[in-house]
Length: 278
Ligand code: ZN
Ligand code: FE
Ligand code: FE
Ligand code: ZN
Image 1 (cartoon, rainbow, N blue to C red):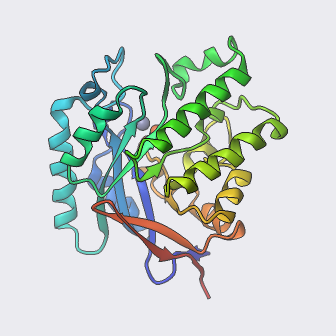
Image 2 (image 1 turned 120 degrees about the horizontal axis):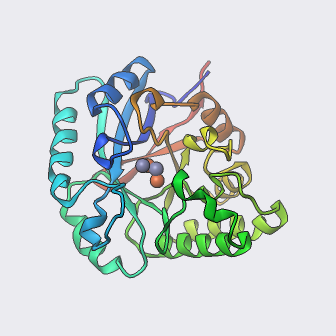
């Protein structure tokens, strides 16, 4: 069994029902974290696309009017909780052209950290099962190239603390050969490093057709070699998913050379040790 040293384990990526595709109250996520011995958690629900002027056909984020309620609910939970540290995070869609709006809006809120994620290529919500068929009717090489260009732009935007599920384009199991991926993996690790960014080991990918964490082992290895800071999240969309696959995730992190995990408070990064239990 692996634990994060003196400081207990963290789960930095949990959702709430405000995004319309998650279940369970934040208090229920907290209780599962307690049962699993997780000492620090962070909610990172989807930032309102409405604040970016993006119309949603079917909503996948909270509405603009719900943001303050989300912030208040998580802060109240944090204030009432004595054992577990509760952080206020947010998962923000990177959409080209919206950088200035986000640069103005995001610092107004008391977030502990901001996860930047790519869920859209133009109108295409490519991580949504309902829209996955498009992978088959388009050129996969072009999809990958477009995805990684967006990711690298997002990394260079200066808007985010943590990059979310950095190879999520593999979610439904559509893959390029490793020889073709090597370029994307190398460049992603370099760009994360250059921008002094953290990324997450997101365990949700194992339950998707990809059947593998985001990112997979090779990209994780390259990031470790370059000493790109890593944090850990389940991307739970239900309380039962909190801390999912974390034993394997910690073993993998250790295996590729990581010895610490990044944690955040009011957008300041710190580290806790990742050690094998004696
Ligand atoms: Zn979601
Ligand atoms: Fe996401
Ligand atoms: Fe998420
Ligand atoms: Zn997600």
